[in-house]
Image 1 (cartoon, helix red, strand yellow):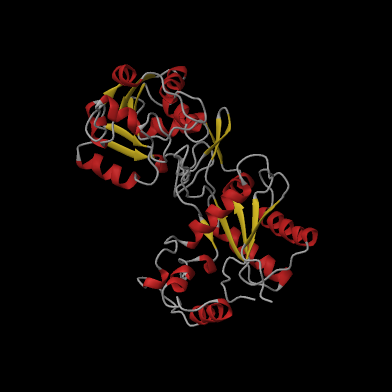
Image 2: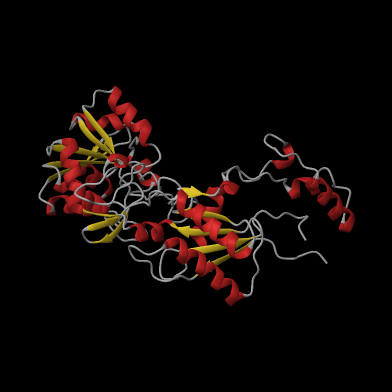
Length: 397
């Protein structure tokens, strides 16, 4: 009888990681111990993944509000800063905003509406339609926003982010003004010095602002892209991907992750004789139909992975084959026909009708999303995920 189980994703418990810990040894030993505990064996192309958080914690990649303030002040001169397109997040952006405010005299925050870049809604599209507002053209002051929409709170967090962000800035001693617009150039009526806080659209936003006459333009990826007073940093992403660690400190996205995944792969091979793929993962990329967020607040799903995880799936759509090419078959005859089709499939199915409907995303984005859902973000205590059978197909026994 053919094997009945396909892909299996397991959360693996690990010690609480602290600065200076040997992350390579901890991940390797945790997976080997889990194998003994759960009774599974290792195979080539199994996958071991670890959250970016434990890599950054082991690296000690932290920075304080004062470190952020010093970098912002050095780059913008300590005067008025336009902060545009930040996401609505106590965990992701609030501590960063405190640092920005401490490095400036005035902060003009420009929020996109009805939602931020990753789908956190200030207001609903229905409310915008009801009030006759054009989000592509209309620039709203805080007073106008309140007149039209009142005091809306986030569906899940219960936070009024307009009030919250304004209070954070003022508590740090800076003036604050909040406007609402979706055209980056709108900020230039308030200041020519702009900090772009969008994640995935940041390059375009910077380009538009510079072409429109902005004088100083940086992105969050350029704040703490080098150490400040001995702080942590990330040369590629700066503050992007950072999380709140304490009330005055952020944990930055990990840096130099490739040597980590390569070393874990090597140690696992030495211990098991199998070539196991390894990756670091952050936020997955998937949309919540109720809260409407699409999760990916990190600059990438995976900052590092071994070479066997490069590329995209190359799969046939079984239901397409069953409903079309093999529509006249059934039972074992259908099963064998489909197996034969899989065994003889091309190495590149891009554009082929038989692959239509398969997920057109990179392997690391798909696997990282699976890992993020498996490990969760709370108290599960499983920052390592072990996946088997991901690369199997219907022919694998």
